Image (cartoon, rainbow, N blue to C red; front, side, top):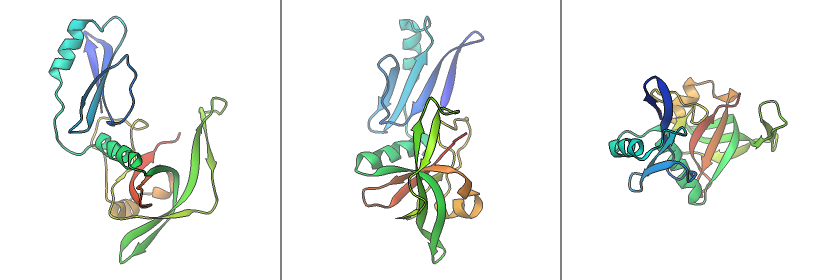
Length: 193
């Protein structure tokens, strides 16, 4: 969720909603609401950040409740991790169903490693050829999660069963958010070029 700030015909900055627990650098302007768990970062190009411009921008923004967005889903993922859960990167190898509903997912666990020497600046290593089974309840999936996918449009956040039945899910990478109880709480698609 990014809005561009223009002066005349030039882009001078951006207003970006980010997951609430994301660290920000001290040079950016941050507006946050602890009760709503929503955070906005304002970035302006050098030379456009005088006090009057900043005041106009910050005074015109108010964080309010509203629909559950992809950014809210990422904030919820951060909450699970902060409460003792973990993020597992990998691909869906298989899904186990009972009485027509998914009850566990078999994940081919991998590691995403930043590597300046690799062609795309990263490499992916498979941790084990044997998929790991994780239990799953009634959860939502965010097939294309920011920041790798950030178009201004309605995001598709289906229930897991609908996602498995209607999406070619085996060919993509995901961040699986696993709660402290060992159960998958949400799935965030991860674009890998």
